[in-house]
Each structure stands twice: as C-alpha cells, then as structure tokens.
Image (cartoon, rainbow, N blue to C red; front, side, top):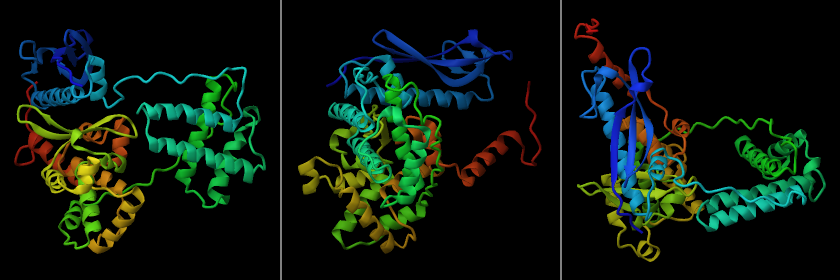
Length: 431
C-alpha cells in the first residue's frame, strides 16, 4: 500500500490576530494534492519582522530560534508524511496533522449500545465491554495487552463480589458510592495477593469507566462512583546514567541468553520502544527518509496506536546487523531476539548483578533511560522526545523525562553570553 500524493508546507503570518504589541502567530498550512489544513506553530513575531516572500522571520532577536523551530516542524511533517505513504493509499491533511500531534491518525467511531430496556448486571456489563473490546482488537484498533487487563479487572470484581459481599453479581441500581471504597480496601488490605496502591487505583478507574458506559446507555441516571478520587502518586522511576548504560554495553558476557537480553535492553535504551513494541519489531518497520536515505524505526505503538518514530543510532544499527541472519529473527521476522516478558525481566535482574548496577533492571526502565538521554544528554526538545516515545500527551513525557540541573546550567550559560558581556555587565539592546 503506497501513496503517490504530494505534500506542500507553507508558513504564513496571521496579522489579523496581532496583539497590542503587534505580535501575531505564525501558522503552518499543510497541503496535499489541493486539500489543506492549518495549525498554529506556537510561535509569534512582530508584524514588521515577517518576510512574506521568504516565509521567515527577519530583523528580530529571536529570528534564528524561531526559524529553526519552523524548520524542525517542516522536517517532522515530512518524516510523518513519508511514513504515512507507506501505510495508506490516501492521506488527508488532517491525518498528517494528527500524526504530527501524536494523536490517533483516524477516528475510530463509537461503541454500539445495548437495548436500553434490557439493563445488564455489573458483570454482564463488564462482559459486554470486553466483547466490544475484543472486536476492536481483531481490527487492530486496540492492544491485546489492554484486553488482558480488562479481563483481569473482571476477575477482581467477581472475586470482590463473592469473597467480600457474598454475592455472585449485583444490579447496577444497587451500586453506591461506598462500593468503590470497599472494593479498593479489599484489593489493598484483604485480597491474596494484595495489590499496591497504584494498581488498586487502576482497578477503580476501570470500574468507573464501566459505570460510565452504563450512564451513557441510560442504565444509570448517574455514575455513583464518579466523584471517587483515583489519584495515586506515580512512583518516580530514576533513569540509568549514561555511564551505567555504557557499563552494561561493554560488559564481557559468556552466557548466550544474557548476551541477547543485554543487547535487547541496550536496543530499548537507544530507541525508547516498550517491550510489546520491540518484541514485534521487524524489517518492515525500517523506513528510509530524505535524500540521504536516513534510516528510521517507525511503528504504531500497541498501547496507544500513536506512531513512534526514532532515528536509528549507530549502536542500534550495529545490533540490527548483528542479528540479521540469526535463526530466530529469520523465522519470526524480527530485528532482535526477545524472550517472553517474564523471562526477559528475570534475566535482566541477573544481568544487573553481573554488571554491578546496584539496582534491578527492567524493560520499562530502559524506556525512561532513553527519554532521559534524549532530553538531558543529547538536548532534544521535549516535543521531539514525546514524538519518539509515541505519547499522546506531552504531560506523559514530562513524567518520563525530568530536566536535570546540568541541562539548565548549560542553557543558562548560553543565555548569559547573549544577555551579558565578558565582565558580567548587561548588554545594550536597541529598541
């Protein structure tokens, strides 16, 4: 499936939206075969500093910075367009804009509702949701892993009803606000094995979502647990330092299974792919971009269905070449050999001990390490890191990659050279 469409990108100055100081937003227009859409670049410039012919900022203190951002937007759009052309016969400007914004490319429609006169019980409603979710999984619109989580939620609700309330099921009309608190207490205080706070809150969120379906179908006038707060502090995951990553990479290993696990972990550290996505990576996910045929890894995330795209760094290319002719990779069309999730994480703990890291390794830690290296070591903008991670929302990326003091210090030194002279005196700026 390949599109032969042509992309044009135009930046223009919306002077009609100028503020009191004369600064107006710069707009990006995406045109594909005569159809177009627009979005704000997030940049503003004075109406006297925009060159209509060159489509660039001129005679402005921030001209270089703003023009660099416009070039970045243009490049990212071109990369996204190249990727979409390999997957779709027809690409609309809105599809490209959605891809750029890290949101699902196409709308998926709504789930059909039951007959409102036939009100299901709680477990029947959960079954209904699971069956609808299964249909979405069959069409590759949702993840199999998420489906497993919904089935696990059903199991926990059924356990709670039987063990705590001594009933097999419950009518939706009998569910009160206290139901959520009792369910939560059961999960963290009485169930075997006990759940941690964050895991228990996730189950309450799932229950709340189920009851929202009941409200939407008018089987309930109002979700009885809607106001139950599911806030739980996200445990901060401290990424590995680049020195730790190097130590793991250079460690001399003699056991084949640990060598493969080490290589897979390093692959994750330099691509940011989650376990589910690296497990399914194949040569089909390698895309060549631009006139230089730069190699990129591009894949739709199994969890969010948002496309993540990462340039192939030399260390990643080395690993791809290393396993190019490996029997497992040839048979299953994989880039690198990956164990089951359980074995992979078990072997990573063993690898940590051998390398003297001093803390357990796991596949998710590699993803956080990638985010940290891209932001704080290689100095990528947060927006680019978000795109590489395939996040829907940049707030998620902010939880992954926290800006370190070293990055702030470097930026501040750059700022000092712009604002102050060699003696530390404030420079003169013309009005």
